[in-house]
Length: 435
Image (tube, rainbow, N blue to C red):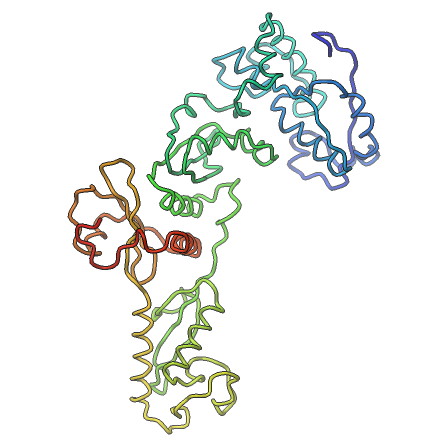
């Protein structure tokens, strides 16, 4: 186009060289048979380059279409660069107050016919009519000029999201929640600055971000006051709601524990097992090899029998490749009572390795403090207290706790925090007046 005059038109199906997913066929009507004899992108790349040379690339949600093309050219080792103009952003500026800026809803609202919805040619024809209307509204060309020169700084805003919802987002640490038309949660994220992080999704050029933004109708948020609780709460909510656009933290990681019980001979037996498999557990690991390594160390330190630590041995327990310090309980050369005494000491040593502490963090306001409670080495939850509250013990903290489940991800989050910040915000056992 030059001005409002169409100079030329180009349209072609492309063979994607992969099978078309069913949901794409449902959305567009294009199936594998339709593209079987179509050219691949490499065959038409030169034609597209020439067709778009010295032109401004215009589209509704331009970043998505532009990046699809740019990625295809990148595979051909060509750097595709064109100036861009987004009719969603132009429409928000020149036709304010619309309930939705999706192409379909916008066309319905201002009387633009939309034929073959979600087909490139049908959407393009409708976008051309919309573009002409926007040109007519911006009769002095000031708005178009700002967008073309890149002086108008705004992300590609989700077409179904009311701007007021974004404007209400705070610039503080917390969790943000994207919801679809039916208020179903589709994505959960954490942020040091909620407003800034949400906006970064709108600027993102990935196809995943584009598809997600097309489904955002509502945004909720939870202020946490600090990044650590934001991370923990994000993890908890992802496992609770299983949002479609979240990828990490969905799959539960198995937890292993060092178990102990008395066997039929009355001897304390140790084993490594899954958390839910037994009640008499001592310590939790999220890596089986780590649990086995700790049990081996326990066996060595307390002269335990490898056979009764569930390590595979032949008839002679001294045949274990590493552990050879059994005092003979398996051969009845040591009294069971003496062996069990050492085994009980080993159990107590494990309990002593599970610390109780809190991690102190800023609250949601200047008038409160936040803490994360770890008891017996396991995350319990977090809470907020008045900064002047008197807290004399860990049990006092439990009255303020919002209980949460411990798992692999919460363990990793807390370990990463301690590795980064050390003991500077950690308070052990006696915490009177420190909180």
